[in-house]
Image 1 (cartoon, rainbow, N blue to C red):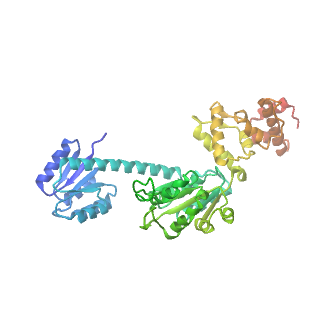
Image 2 (cartoon, rainbow, N blue to C red; image 1 turned 45 degrees about the vertical axis):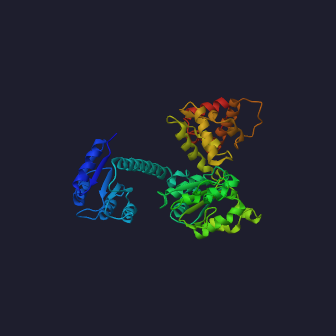
Image 3 (cartoon, rainbow, N blue to C red; image 1 turned 90 degrees about the vertical axis):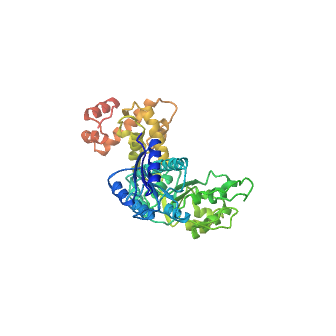
Length: 449
């Protein structure tokens, strides 16, 4: 592991030399300067991890030095030392970007504790930035897989949703990708480096719902042993995703409505109003307007959420996306490159997919396990897919799987010949098999032109 490198800026020789020697003894790489100008020359062409600077320097005010460093090296970590300025000046330094301040005189142990905490913070931020960059790549607009006109149009809508601060309501059946869409919106928005807080309203305990969302102060109810920030407040500056929004208790919906309208909340037991800046994305598999007509969901809340509506079509209404989705998931689960026969895609496109994208993913994983990891054929498909596809008009229970597959193959061969007006060459191309293989199969099954 590389040593942590530290730059010290201190005009008092005794303090500077003492700090320099003590930190070298602790295993750090240290460079020290008596003025800000020499420091700035050094940082232009050298890399380092931490800068420790006095706030009173002979040439440039310490606060000005911090501002220059932050403008040119925004991710640099800084500690400040002060004996002359007030605590207010040190706090101003922290507003500029300093991690913490040390009041002179301070002990070596106090300095080392602050450096240790700063390194920990630096590593956490690096990890967060790495995860954030990964998510931004993972949740590009193309991550909603498909080639249908619906998907093409959806990607356009997502660009508008990502660049707007207005509320978004995502509707669609289970498995259509509502959470994926929420991720795409957040990680392509100006808020992508801010918090993205997800709340599943369906699994929150009823008796803790208000506290989970809005937070509470100590003593506000039995068990409230300390102040707690709610999920809404956690999302300040970023995005709040409320999944299964229809499960929010009716009595709390007015409080959520007030937050959406005013941009402010109050923790349970507190009279203090907290102003927040949050983009809200809600999702549901139910029809909120119908629920509102039955008195189960506030109509005014529905309209407040439904500023930018996004309705996700079920797979059965865009079957042309099935092959590309299945191929996508097979590529994820397969250890090596795997070939999928065209007749497999033909079967998949005739299946109802009640579980939507989630079901396609599960079937792809199962099929890869059942295959020989080189080729996926009809007999690798789960029997329920074959039985429940529109190909299947058989009476089951009296024949083996191979007999059923033979019947399907015969039907595919006949349909291909019919589509190609009995032209065997074109039929072989359509089925993506060699002409000799087609002739062999026609002979095997006694199919004549």
